[in-house]
Image (tube, rainbow, N blue to C red; front, side, top):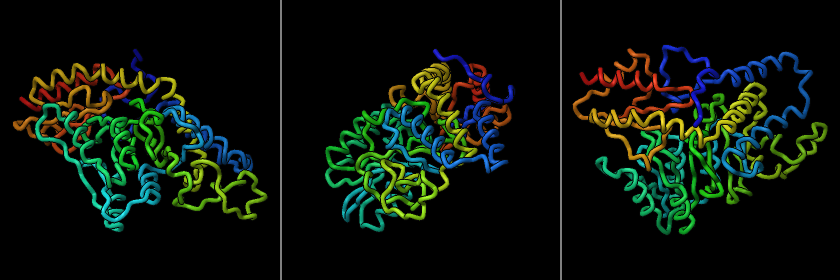
Length: 384
């Protein structure tokens, strides 16, 4: 079992930060990498043409290892929404077809599909969770499978639901999507890094993720895996660095129409950020050392006593088989005011997110039993 790693972070001892789903703290190693990168630009003459490529390729390789992909299939993007815009631009949707999403999905993976549906005369099909708490995750997964029918063009969702951590069976959903010829688009921002993901098993057409949450990296950077369906697509930007031969600066005015091989064509302009890229590399190296499997086991073990206790207080929590260990929603009982709970948590310096009627708890390896105890104390106090 992975041990608590709080010593590698600079979190205050009196803060109980259980909110990685909002934004991860930076480890000391990632912070140092960023500061070193900033200082490197003090003397630009020391930056060489290879510096525009080496670190980006290293980050691409590390992320590929994290999701069990080939590095050429990884694009460097500035955000998850950028990667989702690539999907919306390149995946064909015809009049009368349907695009399937989940209820209350994160907006970045809904707005592009609303636009595509309106422009193409397609139907945006939103699959709601079942009422009640019994077998909710299981039944929601079943509903999704039932909505993926012939005529479905795109299925777009997360690995876990961003509000409460409900986990979707992406292997089964992906298999069903392939049966009907639909593209599978995954926003992994709330899972990649903390929950194991294997593109060879799920077979998404595109997987996107921001770096500032469970990848433990900087803001304004992310990664996207692009499958064969996107091999000949059109990028959002026509960057110089995405063109074949861009490594040779003296030849850049010999304009070429062919792209770099693989997903590099989709890289964001100025992807060679000399501060952010070293931070992403340091964070990915640390995650690969810890492994998503060990992180998931640690967080699940950490939250097990929490789940048992809050259920006794009347809160509802998704069944273990259908939620992530790293992100879970505590749905507030009718007799409890969620606003008062949130206020009590702030008073105790317990940092979580409130999403609708759920308290979203998202621990990581810098948390320990004391953080869970502080959360429980605040929940007991809000009830009294």
